Length: 272
Ligand code: MN
Figure (cartoon, rainbow, N blue to C red):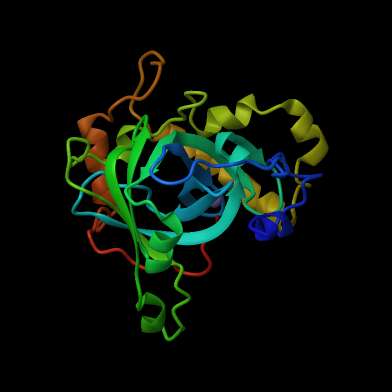
């Protein structure tokens, strides 16, 4: 079953994530169907690209997030299918697999450029059109080979690249920085955390100490630090805002090599 791995990894008595018990029929052929990108602050920040197909969400974890600059190829690790209703999920996973904060960073529809999506996946070349709030136009997911073997490991075939094609929706903007907030709540990670249903915190808050507790502490700190790193706001503005120029420079000088065009294989297991 397509969702077996998804279910194996989670305890739904402790996780607010959807269990995926509602079967769903997806459109076939070149018809628009649901897609989303969830920004996931877990042990590592990453972006989960999810494309509806055959009643599930095909999923790729993109460590650096999608880039709308066609010269930038972003590593995308193919991970297990998710239930379609997961695609609207935003909130806090207090413990267990993927513990952290999930933000619905973009959503909309995707349309395959081919009739046979399964054949495209098998071939390792899926061309598509996205119609989200932030991501639009023509894109491709291409499977890569060889990165794993460079580190002396067998290539497990899970490494793909997410690439924007040149069109009116492409540009030299860092979309993840330019539009960092939720399309569902308008919030950042800290706001999603503080808006969380208090019941979840009472029942499932990780015990102080322990690995999960420590990890969650650091996630909360990171959420607050990311908030502090956002554009100086005299008054709270609604929606997305462009970073002040000075801030962008600071961020760049702190991270030499950020925005490098060469994708690198992630270290360790990709999270999803
Ligand atoms: Mn994830």
